[in-house]
Image (cartoon, rainbow, N blue to C red; front, side, top):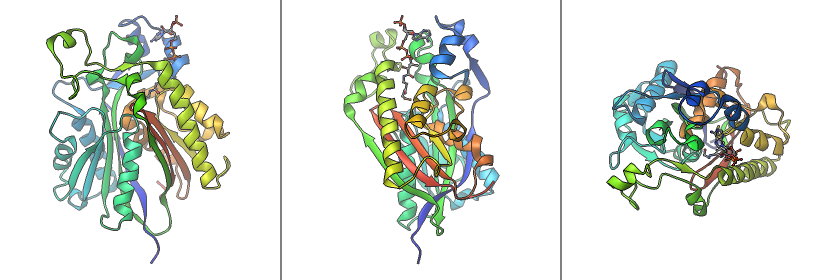
Length: 331
Ligand code: UT7
């Protein structure tokens, strides 16, 4: 019998209606459209404004989009992974709530947190369950409501992040398509440069820290930028080498959308022409766990069976990595 590989067989997505444009941000903090566009490539981001709606709301919408598009019976889904850095609540699993809401009543589910690399690491986990032969339908959702921990008075962070979600289904493949190889890494020394310090178990929120805004995300942008460029480009180059791939062999680069300059630096390291570089940061900003599935959603109609896609991500922790996947279907 041929080896089982884990292929993506469907994509769904959801972004909230509200568009927070650079022009609106100009009225909120000391910034301008020209600075944001040249430094990051972002023009607008989507924000989930409705009170009481968290990451699961985005995750459910994206999963529902996939279920409707593919005509799946949610009862056939065996595992639901919600990759997220912004779970609905402490203690209660966002994935369990999401799975039940979409009707995946026969599934087990769990959250996976690796900051901006959550979805990339989730691809590895979802694929391993499929490759083991034990599971045949694994739903991986990347969803984040970043606006829930952004300080809209801090220009260093509020211009970057947005809300959104994307979902993919992994199924077994017997033609050798799907996930081929991965290089995944982490380094806890990076924690100090990107974190929301208060609100976790180390430092619970107090009235004083709340008033000082210490529960919001803090980022030492320049250090994160340098590490992102170096590490994302490094693993991308290595995964190409390890699989004897040249830039001509690669159909697409799907890189985490944190900053256009980081994505371009990664592409340039492996001499990839701009037409092969998926890009939608201008529309959504950095949606953390949702950037990779949102790219797949936006480019799905251009993807062809057998296309060789290199995924890459870098995020808080630090966490980073690269995955080589062969696309499994024509739209
Ligand atoms: O997804 C998780 C991983 N995250 C990332 O990969 C993000 C990585 N970092 C970045 O993308 C970039 O570092 C930022 C976009 C956050 C910042 O861009 P930068 O080119 O690194 O800017 P900088 O922090 O070095 O600041 C340059 C200047 C400073 O002014 P001076 O000191 O040169 O006078 C800042 O005060 O730009 C100023 N500045 C701004 N000006 C207008 C910083 N933020 C803004 C702003 N608008 N929003």
